[in-house]
Image: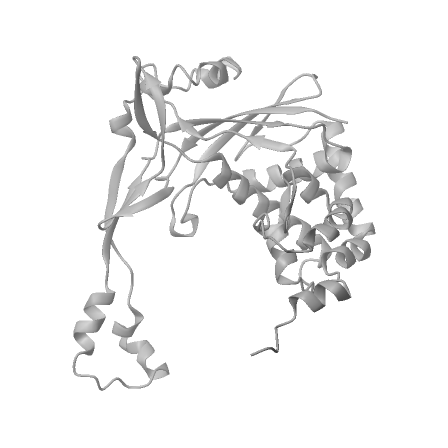
Length: 330
């Protein structure tokens, strides 16, 4: 069994978006409160749960790439099973998904690593992640232990005069949501509108808005660690996903629109042995013992793909099917 601890240092290459609420036409970024000079102050941050969701998607995509032989085969998951894999499931009273938890968890290392809800039963995650917090005047104290754990040359990258929290935010915009009904080249695919008020309606659909962002150049820090010991397959699953994340690392939302790209540096401790670095855009060669775990995990998916597919697509029991069937009563 294995134990791991990671210290992550990110530097934003593009603005980072992680909205929590919308006030007027401004999407506000998530904030956490920290104590600075004896008073609580709000500081922009990215929730650990958002990173877990992003990482879960990466792990799932990597797994299905192997199970489907890069798309050559098709895996059709029941909706509840899809939710368990990609979104962590849903706590739902009366569900019988819990009856399938053991079979699915035994077959799928991803689920044992990152956990999920199976109806009214929770499979706990073995992986814990902290919030991703910018390095600033107000956060220096709470990030002190994380910074101290980094290599000296990485610490030297941090600004000697950190920004204040007020400098960690800006409103990006004005942005507009494109209205394709105004694109005449696409109207040949639509029925002609005859409503005299259509121009006014289209104008209303054109919303101008702003988004609060963390600016490019900001340094952010995070920690990851296991709450329970990991077996070889779970360790291999974790590092397989980590390698994929480091190929094109991004944080927050709207990465497809150019936001969130970061440079990532990870300082990794496994089983008390000498730590090693993983850096995006650089060498991603793993120590032999870690690479063996990754290879073992991939081999497991290849050799056990039939059993895994069966566990993921298992039909509900007759009792469950009867309970879930639509009622014919008036």
